[in-house]
Length: 419
Ligand SMILES: NC(=O)c1ccc[n+]([C@@H]2O[C@H](COP(=O)([O-])OP(=O)(O)OC[C@H]3O[C@@H](n4cnc5c(N)ncnc54)[C@H](O)[C@@H]3O)[C@@H](O)[C@H]2O)c1
Image (tube, rainbow, N blue to C red):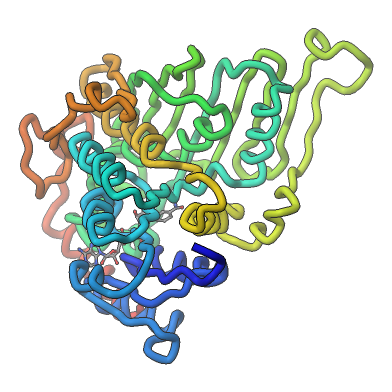
């Protein structure tokens, strides 16, 4: 495909509406958008335009897929991306999927097979690897300057108060109300994998349980029945260890990444855009300072990224998707990497429920090895039956009262009326 506009459909009108706007600025032509939630759809139409802008709106995903477009962005529920991706690939559409790649290990098998059979592009929209700090760490590691990767840390911390909780969660059935704390693992593992070029081969999961004393776990907020924080200790395929904290509720909103190699260490931390690079004299003889702090810039060819969300990451995911569709670059975060960074969250929870026993992260390139997960539907969705169903918290079933739920519903209705 040349540089002509790529016709785009977007599934999901929350984050999806924002991504549709980003994609338009990058050379996609938005032609269709789908969401079953009509108030959200109306809101999206106000910002993106309707017939006047050539956009058709759908509430039914199957009908939406019949629309004439080349590529789809999946920004539907985080726990429903894989089946939506499989359907879209079968309908002949290139796919960019929001996080997570899949919700069960069985879905990972179906997803990888659909991608392989289709010959179409599947690009995972994990955006955290593309902040300027993470891109700079990738440059330093991949140039060989820092030596061998030995140890890494990745944290994504996002505590939420009642107003945001109500805006982000439609009710107790919504994934944000019940998804276990280890599951949203791609924002913290994605950068480590991309910076170092390694993949996890084993995970041990540990959970800091639900905090009953947290003032933001009271009243209407009680419908959120998960835990406080988790650590996924991952062994990487080069022998390094990576300590990953997915979407914790600790009071330090932001990200932190640390990459230790055998010739130097790099890190950056919540709220401070500066990268700290340490080159000790024992490895770098001379009089130069051992520690350097600086604000990395995007490489010249990507300078336009700085105005986009998530530290520029939201530019890269759509831009790289378009580049892959046009055949200008290989897919950057492909289906195998997407499965690796998502699987540690699923299997990490299974591990945590057994006090941290190790779980293998199978390489899905290996058709025989991945077969072990065919049909594996183990999952914590209260509405989706499976054998040995886990609760959303390591403590077991967390309760809320009818009054807590009624209060949540009242606040949510107020929010929806204002949309
Ligand atoms: N990468 C990031 O930085 C980032 C940031 C925010 C959200 N996300 C991801 O984006 C996705 C969407 O998140 P969100 O914040 O918009 O919240 P959300 O998950 O509540 O929104 C999903 C939307 O999809 C619609 N939807 C779901 N199933 C549907 C169906 N079968 N038919 C029609 N419509 C359907 C819902 O009505 C809803 O409006 C999630 O996967 C989330 O993880 C990623």
